[in-house]
Length: 313
Image 1 (tube, rainbow, N blue to C red):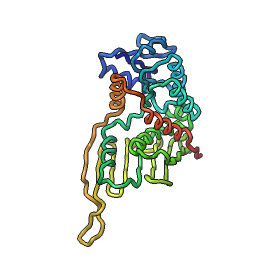
Image 2: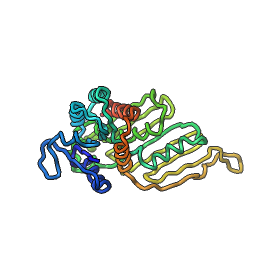
Image 3: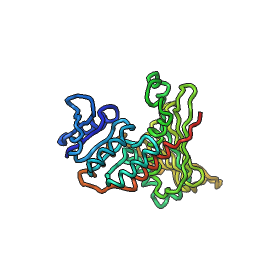
Image 4: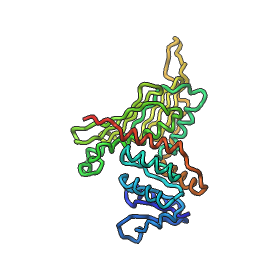
């Protein structure tokens, strides 16, 4: 299989390293439009010959590359790094291009492919879980207080904390919840006067169940990933890689008072990162799987929620 990558630094380098380590027998084509290097190709036609493509260049270039692929009638699988577009307007252009040219696009949201997130979904789907009341998600680190952040592109883009970070949490939410098509989710980004940057993003929904609260921060202590799902019969908690379930609801002391349920499930998972999502993409490419319209539409919805965030200063 011949694999093409657009991009060669930062996140693209993670893809390149993963392929070189785990797919040594596959040919790798790394494209950059200008930079000359033995590692890179400047010929776009080299990409058209690939069996699948990964677009991991800056987000501002994504729509332009999708247009070029459409013009070349490219029909092979495309892994488009999230959020995939730079504005709500671009999201509709992307949607039209996909429909018109039947592009097989998968967005690069990796969390739903991780074993620990899949296990949460399995637990939620169990008949004894009951109805979901609320879902809380938190992911954070303190990079906005770093000196290098002052000149970084993340500080220049008011919505970066939303479409690069909050979008990850929404991808988990939409994976866990199936029948959420009409739920209204509001998003906001908050200004931090200490760092003079928009470094906190919030997505919430309180009008319908499940109640949602998702917070992504660049201005706080490190929280690798924290998820809490409250149902009518279980409390499901993920702290980084440790998943615990407390149940059932009706547990009493000798006086008939409610007490905290025992832990009925506990497991520490290995941190998997982007590996499962990339493996799934390459397997789908190898098997020539058809375009997944449902995943594509959910990814568009996530990006639109994040790009429409209210700016609070």
